[in-house]
Image (cartoon, rainbow over all chains, first blue to last red; front, top):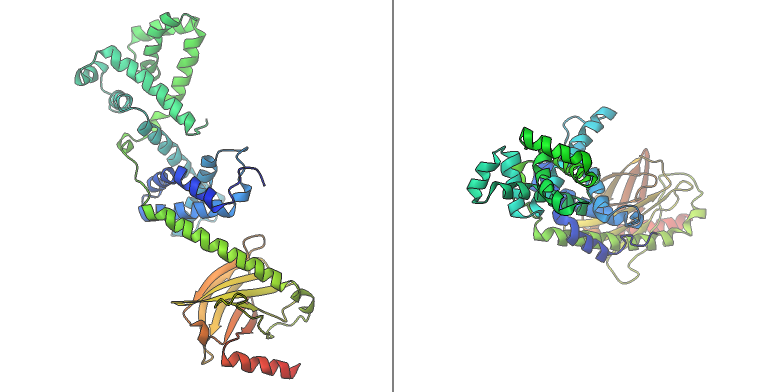
Length: 169
Length: 235
């Protein structure tokens, strides 16, 4: 059994307090239903506990492992809900792909939540709303150069947060 | 690296990575990047981030929903009860160990008597099916509950994928369904089922595994005592 394996009920409690809110937030986003999301998170921690001896922190982070389990849980839930069961490989692929896309979206949205409000604000205004820097600067009552530098530091902050979250690309 | 000189350029790199620089500004910056490896590396890493932005939905940058407080407790409770039932199962397997050799009498539909029960004075009952085909083990723990009886089934040695139906036989000989499960090699070989019949009124535990039927009479009931004495007479 690798050191750091998840064998104790206390380990599971610690894993829960560290990661449940992220897993749940993502499950709600990807399943679109808070009841199903609860079910998915519960099943994820049960499976994690049952397979806890196989968790090896040398190989990957606990967070990554839990998200991999959640991925399987969500796929199983999707299969159970599917009107027609998917038999072909294609069908299964199709149910996995939106999960990965949703996970990517969710990670970036989570990173956006974690950077400072000033940084998020200029990224939303200039990038997502496509507004001119001068207009945003006026609205915020700062020089245009400040908007520019906030965009720069905002992107850097985003990069740091994504790294902290274990985003790999 | 001319840090101070680069500072001015660097602050343009964000807008550059987002494609927001006007033509002249961009041309000037790109001329600088030609000759400055540090700024080039910074630009690359900002481009890596900016490529991700289209995947996010700005409507979702607000606070994320939080799991309800009781979810953690519910998970802890489920894990606790699963751990207890594992422990019980280990005792059960240990108890089964000596039965293997004798089980070589290979015919099914034979009953069986009961490895009884409540070693710690608990109300739960351990049930071992005997006279099973060679290599097959079936056992169960029964626990009285408010809704009826909770059944922890332990199966080993039958074909993987076999559908098992479990019933509890009531006082009138009627079978009360306790549900079904599939046995899988390598998977967790126990299943937790429940039947709406009080344990005290149950006469037998019945398992249909594939085409075979196994019956284990239960102790602590008149019917069980009757069965048991019949078995003693016949041996």
